[in-house]
Length: 467
Image (cartoon, rainbow, N blue to C red):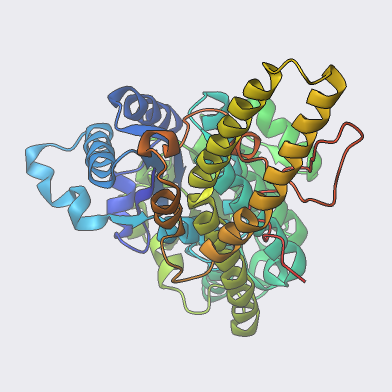
């Protein structure tokens, strides 16, 4: 099974391109469904944020899966012949196998974000995974990948100072707005400004919270769903404003933050007609919430995603990032080790299955003999099972341990050749848990009935080591 990440982000495309190729929730759901209907892709998760659109997928073949994903992205983007320069080849990237897993970990850690270390992406990644899981679009491979990526993201935020050192996109935008306000005659910066936020989603909520903590002179919230605006305003002791009268709202503030999910600009030059006082506008949306003409108005300064992207020092401190990189490298290495070890699992399961068939055949032969009592036959069965378990336990544990090492030989092929295992028997099952089929049992743990048992190993956990 091939793991792929196919997408575009602020690292591969200009902000204007990201804006043109943004994918909303409905389009993302349509993309996932279409990929699974096509047959080439077996599992799919679509991550769509203000600065990335990525498809995480598993496919039977690399080229078949890649072709299917790119074709569906072009369809969802609605590209026509006159926009050929926007095709995937001009602005996209592909990660495969271990590189795809490493990319997922970096995204979860916030190291692939526009503002290095920003924490919002972890929640966005979780939401994308949960949406796909609830739609039954996630199987064993992506389930394990996202569970591990989310765990790593949480660990990085818990064990490093990345949260304190790494501002979010909102914090970076407001830092730029602070400078613009000072230049516009507000020596106290944000704290001296009357502010308003348009939008009450994740980005709007964070902007509202950040502004409230900054001690702005006044704060108002406007949202298409007024109930949502009122709930957010109540939390931060802010006022609410009508969403359909942005001209009136803009006339009353010095700082306006726009963070909606609207496919079209919500703030236009007409909303600011006749205004003479300075105004700083933060546009945190993709597609843009603020029309281009607004930035050309006298006295208006627009801080948008492109300016944030160009800003110097918009990220975690270098020493903190170095610590995060080291932790991330450790986690990626452990995950890759688990993948290499897992690759030999179907072969080991097939070997144990062959051994079990041989045991059952011999026990059936013994059962046909009339000179054994039932108790004797049961004792023979227990003895034979114990012997087989003891013979197979150490080699199967060791082969998984050795297979997990970088640059290890193809132990799966060696086992198939040594024991003449049928290729069909080694094929990885599409359903069920391989741990049940494998049943690697330490010889020390013997149950009262003479059989051996142990709890299945957690994904990504290191293999047992010999003393």
